[in-house]
Length: 362
Ligand SMILES: Cc1ncc(C[n+]2csc(CCOP(=O)(O)OP(=O)(O)O)c2C)c(N)n1
Image: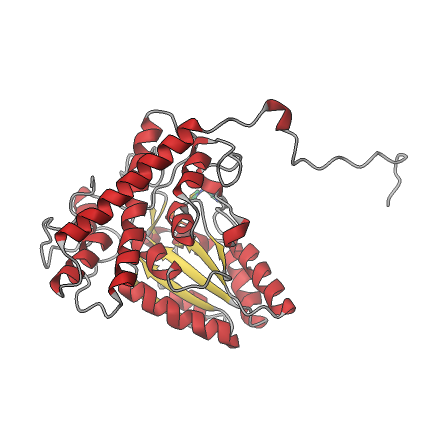
């Protein structure tokens, strides 16, 4: 893996100094993993699949096979893999532009994701959305949203519809720390709390909004304080610890589904790559990034499983090889994909209503 520190056997210095930048680096998670082996391997494989898929996306971007914006999730995989493996298939999911991992864990095929990245019509949004707008009604993935905070009102509305229709499902809404500074965050939490809507607000706090550290744009950097001012329970979780993420999400999901109303989870995490593909990263030091990488979620989870004898190195290599093969297959699928014909371009546009007489209102 190109993120060398985050792989089995890589250097993992205990007690590495905290960076001078934003936030302190949590100690690497340790301790037993009390999951069935098959489940533990599924969660590990999900993280490895995300990592391998996105590493390839970065390469393909350099070759101009993938164009436009591309926001990688590398480093944050434990959040999607841990939380979405605690949800049910009939729960709704709303995410941001950094959503490739969420789509994959949700069950979209890597083929459909990669074809969408390429802009091919075999993609999950017929190639019209691209990286930031992965969408799939069959798995209840309601985007991929390029507007910071844009998913929160959508999730609140989905939950309102579910509540009115008596569906016992929740809507999990993922957003970055930057969204907490948006009006849409406050409007959504306010109404969701007032109407006791089944929304799980999942904040992926990677400590930066583009190149701005959280201390430089938030008056209150404890995001749980902000959320709980609306009267809903709010908890902070180590987002680099896939076990903690999954356990916390499962408990929260039960609370929300049982009619407890919305809940706010803040996952403290870190992106190892640039914000998007063009970013000189002048806002953080290399030592800060390195300190977080040594606590990478794939490395720490693998180390725990190995320490308790649940996973061997050969089994890890097999998971990794399967992920690489899946990526190869997805790239071949996207390469063989087709462009939407020009005559289809207006297909989803609404036909304008015939104009009435001047000044007429209907
Ligand atoms: C309403 C709005 N304002 C500004 C932008 C430009 N923008 C794109 S990403 C981003 C930073 C968001 O940071 P955060 O929510 O923490 O998510 P992260 O990228 O760290 O995952 C901004 C300001 C936007 N897309 N939408």
